[in-house]
Image 1 (cartoon, helix red, strand yellow):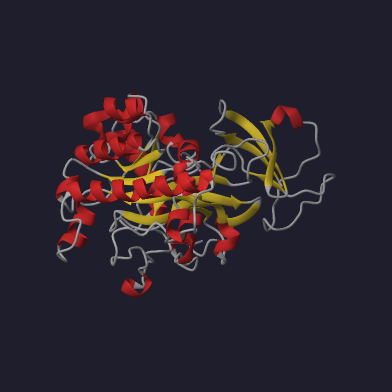
Image 2 (spheres, one colour; image 1 turned 90 degrees about the horizontal axis):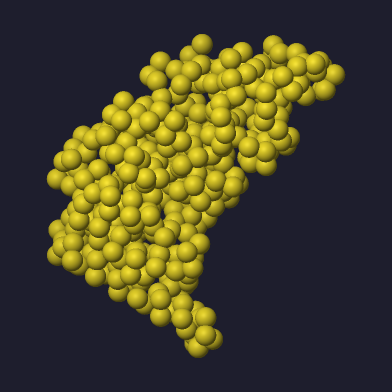
Length: 403
């Protein structure tokens, strides 16, 4: 496939106002200006996007006539498929509220690709997501980074495990304290996590020096975290929870992402000094509990200007996944620079999720995940024209049932 006459926002270099992208198989092969290929015998594809043009190159030519061409949009934190739309409690597998420490749980074992929000996400230009367990437990289990198109999870995976979910604050307190169990306080949350990490560190030391007598399945799940191959994915809203998460990650020399980071704007300097990135949101929702009382779309801009790498999240289904670009736009409205808004749902999200070698920008060698819009996707009236995943058109506005 060759996409021509695009206003190409690569997220890796300056915008190419009139450019092209060549895809070979599932990968991007070339990105450049139309001047490079002006003499070639190209024709616009007039028929179905699945057919080849009858030109000298025998390739599918997609003339987008000046439309915005971007990397596929990325959601860095959500629960799509594991907390399904429409199916109520029967489709909610996001929280195993029977034990506060469950590192061996794998989100990919509960995600249902038939959740209708996957299709809605594709129509919004969202091509990949980081999805996994919720925040009921102190340790919730493993997240997976996946494409939004597919029927079999094993074929949709980009990275698994991709992160280990941990949670601070009201959610673990409420779920276990109300049952008269530990943790009922923030002190207990921190203590349980430290104890678990301490045991995991001892396990790793024994395995490394050859003195381990028997492998422990639960402890094995911590090795990618302790080896800093994947980060802790910390559910944090309040300033004290953010700082506790940073304190524990530093104690155990771990990588971490600060997810939600609702009061991050109040301690932007401390977060920047920590070096940990923030996945901010969901801000397009009600202030449903005390720890989100200071929720505001301004948080992303303040953190970004302080030097923190920022992504924006919907936390689907808390707010709806397909509105991720609009959430980024509202953050821009409240001070996040325009380019940083686009990065927050593309290359920054990819870097934070550690998949920027595959997705997040339009560069040769990366996956052919591309979203094409009538204009800036962060603006309300912008329409998606095409969504391309792994080099294949999976949404075409010409076949949209609304037309």
